[in-house]
Length: 102
Image (cartoon, rainbow, N blue to C red):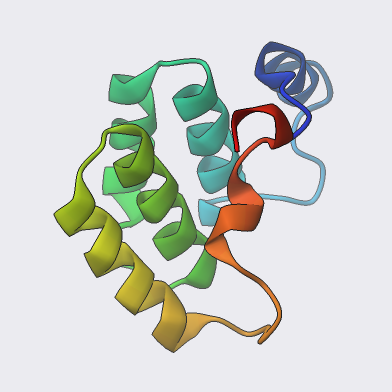
């Protein structure tokens, strides 16, 4: 996905399943792929299911969605939540952005 091959990433998720990923872990990855494909309604629907869950990956995906939707207020809110939940001090939200769109 981060290599700019979102359609291939979605096909692989559908073809192989998500392996050991279930629930929010799988849905946030799928939501990011949907954002990359411009399928914003589908991404939003997945994220809405988990938004009340205090989870680093959910917050990161909400930030990614808000970034694509150009919603600065939602980006800021998601970033604050992500900062409080983040487990790695070297990880950044910008690392979610596919390389060719940075």
